[in-house]
Image (cartoon, rainbow, N blue to C red; front, top):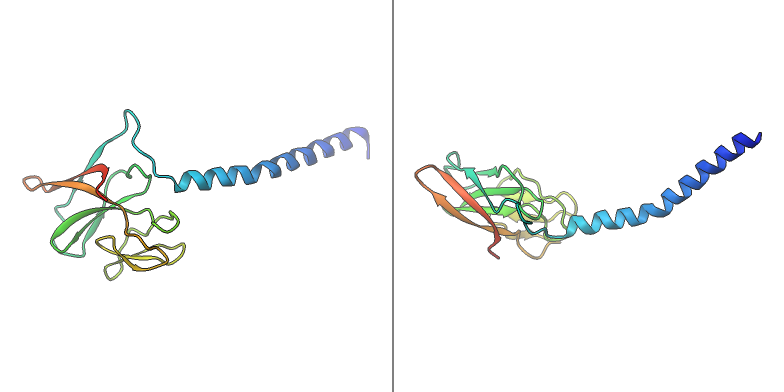
Length: 152
């Protein structure tokens, strides 16, 4: 092996070792930030408006146009004659809960938690309900305002 090839080889090995040493820190930082709740910062949206004109019967649901302050999508559901806005951030380990209800159940694909359309736990390992946002309904325009202030 000539000196240039050896230098290049050592440079690549050293770069790979440094990258591998930093990888656990990067994974830890990403996992930590994914599980944190994020409060709206200055200039961030404090609410969103959702067209709920098609939610005419219990069991129907739609996604809000923007995610909530926790970074998770917001699912607006009609259940028990009420419109609810739920965070799709699983309360077990923070995985994204599926946004399409099947037989009135929302499922977390990571560990199998299940929630009803009111956000209540139907099947663990989660033991607390999904986060719920304060809402106000404008019946004249069939719009639901979702405020980014958790109501629970």
